[in-house]
Image (cartoon, rainbow, N blue to C red; front, top):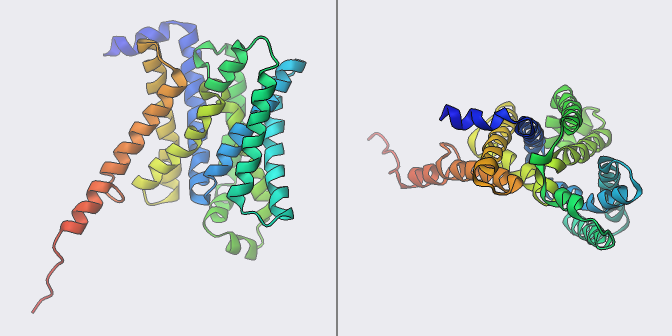
Length: 287
């Protein structure tokens, strides 16, 4: 067993891949806790899918792909806000309009590029191809996101639970919301190399959903969300090495397996526990 775990780590590319995957998935897991509580899962999907045209344009003009991804991620957030303010459409509708339109634009731009191998890696992830420079970039972005989340943890938590009360006590609700959206864009860029555009949404939703089913306090939920992401990353990277399957897909399936276990066996909100409580006879009152 130990040999199975240590053998892949003899290779530098596996060391880079494992480190990048764990950092990306853990950071996504942390942010996932807030996204789930705030009902922002669709917003995460919108940002993740809207960055595709930015990536393609950055590739065409020779800029770092992360720059194009971040710019278009923030542009998507701005467009969603603009449509919400200038129309009577509900937020889920404006999100659907923006992210599907931008994703379609990205696909059209991709069709004009002759060399698609690198762009396909962005779509589906290529963690086994990460370099030491990629690791440093992911670590830096992850450190920035984690630091801000932890420093402003109390404010973000209050924002998630009671936006009206947060505004009443003088918290800058608009500014805090903007910071969270910027962190969402940064986190999406961080996870691109590992999961790709298509699967990064799962990393921003599944860990938080899993933790929500298991624990009671938000502090525990935050820690468990990050742990679920990290465990999924390790499992997925090893699965992709030994079985020669998609790394990003393996990571997401590992996270899905943890969610399934929580859904079935969580002592608080699990399906089996709830069914057991319904079947137990009600206690009799003392005569």
